Image (tube, rainbow, N blue to C red; front, side):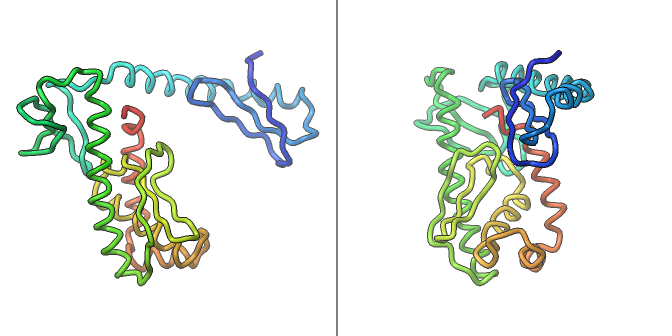
Length: 222
């Protein structure tokens, strides 16, 4: 029988989750018999194996990821080559990412992330300013985070937060996240009215959602 972590809650159904470390987690109702839980896990063995294979492949890609003259890096949904030269910090010039030629390989990823964070603050602040006017709301503060699984959020105090990893996505997908979070200034939920506000600004928002998901597989490399 496969090992798994059992978490009992006041839920009504059984649910499976494969954590990033490959561990299997089962959430079950408080009084659900262990025999039923065991059978549930056994019946989903094929699904568990497939999910674990995906996780293993992502870990392999992350371990093999390095920044060198053969690397292609994403910016606003497009891939660009890497070059090394007489620069003081990571820069994007002439359709390529430039790194200081003397920078050790072990420092390149953190330097790249620093570049993305700076670019995200500039680009996203600009888009927030633009769409705030379109929607008719105010954002008191724009915050840049390092979130991996959440592109953006909006607090009741008016702070809109975005992951710097959004800079990997296409501009149209980025605008969707910006509009999504700003519409929470009108509705702090995901009601029909909320989605009506989003559609009023971006009628094709569902297509933009799909495009955003494409980039998700690349996020864990950074």
